[in-house]
Length: 463
Image (cartoon, rainbow, N blue to C red; front, side, top):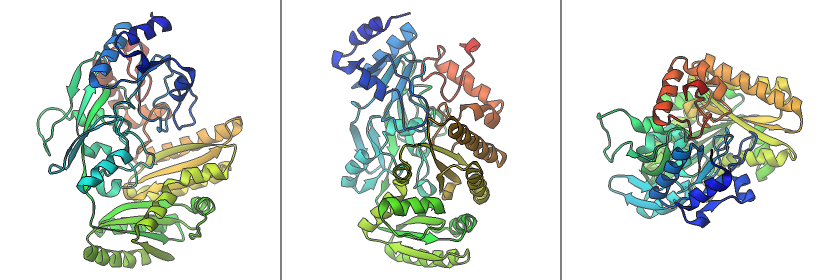
């Protein structure tokens, strides 16, 4: 067993000294994410600048059996990057280059530390954009690790749908590619699908080749208010069935709309509200939007407003994206617990109503928002972390909505991931398939060094 001093000395023998840190502030920054889970510091943080340096780190970690946790920007919400086993945290912030834009193939090759907004700024020069929008300005490596999603998933899909190839450094330092540049392939197992969403438990991503899209000719947004959540969700189902090209469709419940108005100094109706965005050409979209107006009127829509001006569009989506900060600002001294589940769309209204009933019964302040186009919703709950009763209630609430989602044929998490927070539901959700996942983990990481005890908690006797 290496001492910390020996570990640091070994790392400095393969990396420049300035890329190895035991500074307490830096270790604290890498001992937490944006979740409510208990922090825990790594022994050392390293900042590789190339794939070759990641290989050296992983070979050293494998040799001395030191746990390793990959780290993007720490925006995850279920404790993914918290190193409870200490060891090495690999911060990919120095690997932040857009390596190649293949505009004619609608592909881009990037390093894992590139952020979503950084990539879109570069792509704009080519008339392209990257579609996955989780709200936070996360790194693309982190987004792939958690299979990030967001407001645009209803039109463009989730992170897994955008990944064409990954360069991955495995636990023993071996480098593999999981795909290629082709639009489709029937060759081999689907490794892209395996590694995307693996939460750093199977390997470290050092390059990503991603699908990108042409910037739409015309964008229109709408905000529609309804008397009930069920009416709003039913309207969305009908809009999708009609084939209207909705690019984003977000549900914000009544308590959340109140926080939106308080935080943004707006005067939106404080009712269940759909925030929608449509992409296409101007003539076609105007026809689609007229059809959409007819549909929402069938579900008692009580008001609809449109935006095409870019500043107004930005304000609309900033109000949605900043909802978490609106709650935090509105409840000083409390910490936000954010959780998500995903259910079949036909069950979404009932699942949200069940969640609101549970929040009210437990007397917890919070809001419910959803990517209603794909059945995913989030609960934002404000709790006093020094109040054991509020913590207990929040855990009870989380249990209620997860069990309800599983009973409806859904999943314990639609996009936040498992980390440590949703780990206890894995066996209930996956059954015998969980054992297959454990065997895959051990085949690729036999010493259980990569982000140990996250996502898949390998039984100690198997290691």
